[in-house]
Image (cartoon, rainbow, N blue to C red; front, top):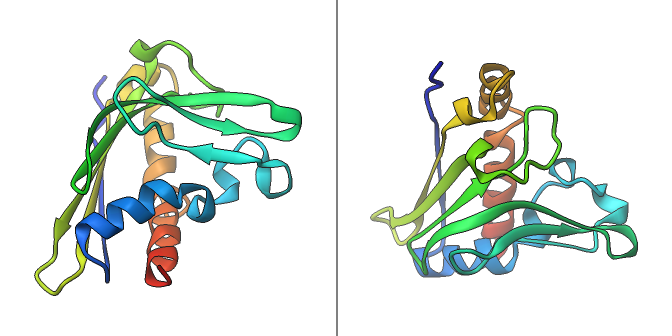
Length: 157
């Protein structure tokens, strides 16, 4: 069973290198609390790995750490790709063979801003429930909500 990738894009009014920096360095400030294990009150830190092989992580109450992905590629100012090691049941998935992959690119939009394109592919690797999981992440409560949170944050950056 193959699931088509999710493809979303948004534009932010800052140049690509700045957008990339704001995306990475401000991750904890714009990432929606609904997409964390700790929620708004318990979240101490969350971030993407800055280099290939680095973990994408969350630190919650009392220093509890959850690694929810691993960075596979980084081109500063242009692109980041990471494994999405969160299963359809929202549980962390330690086996990278059962993870999908998210790639985000940052390109000039022609008006001094940045076109941010997201592709989330490989849902079939999540196994049972993959199609429903893909539908959930493609819905208005998935990647569109997450990217809109970044757009709002980037406008103030």
